[in-house]
Length: 361
Image (tube, rainbow, N blue to C red):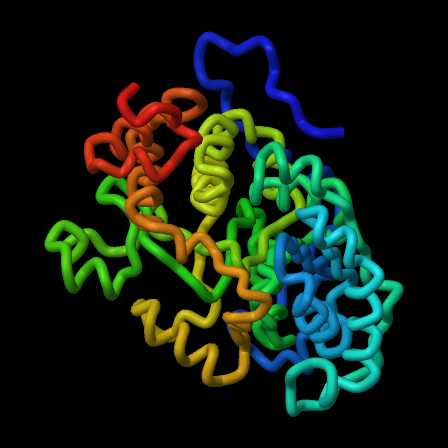
């Protein structure tokens, strides 16, 4: 059933729920070798589910799915169908996945053979169209909460192929946090700055903006975030975001989903979880990203199906900057949406976002 906003609103923002303490005798997740350790020896890495939402890349998503099934130890791979076009091509997607598993050199767009046979029983396909129509890309977290069965979740966009070593490194960070009694956070290869000064990539910000040059990435102040195009978290943290989604619903509906990753990071911070870059050999994001991609840890499949992300939208970064600044000021629920609307109007950009109503209002 689609989510419906409550008719009643509390007089103030509801308190953020924190993760419950582990019960006596409850088994903790096993930690493993940390960032980019030897994947072959990480036998005690916790089971993990990979959740892949697909809105318009039905013609190429089989490459992502078959890679996860044939070259990683994911316990399950969940294809979340976000549009009617994807649902209508469900059988075609499954057929392409099977062919890519059987003959990757011909059907998977790669020159590398599969490491092992695909277990197609691990692939789940979920119709999430109705919910996506209501809350857009944030619906991916609800699908994960309802359908994933592993203690660790990996959220992956439908145009990213990650390898086993990177996935295990990400998952091991979640497991290590739980084993140490800490609140598990969000872990992945791509980071940005998001705070009172707005939103930016560290290299870009420090090169062009004096305020950012003296405002380094900092977990405690909430300036470091992890992009959820490829990120690992606990099923518990994912559920916490779903439970507290009313804090962000107004904004997400108005932006048609742009910023759902920013709100997820905000929830992680509020719950006391860290946001950490996996394989952080250098604090400079650009160097890390290039090193991970050139090393084959993950690759973007840009250009398939003619499908663009929010990055192609006009003033994408201005909107995200407004979201970051407003959340840093403590705005949530309806005041968060109004704060972002005010910022866009001030910058002359309100006409680009119909979800905020009349630009003159």
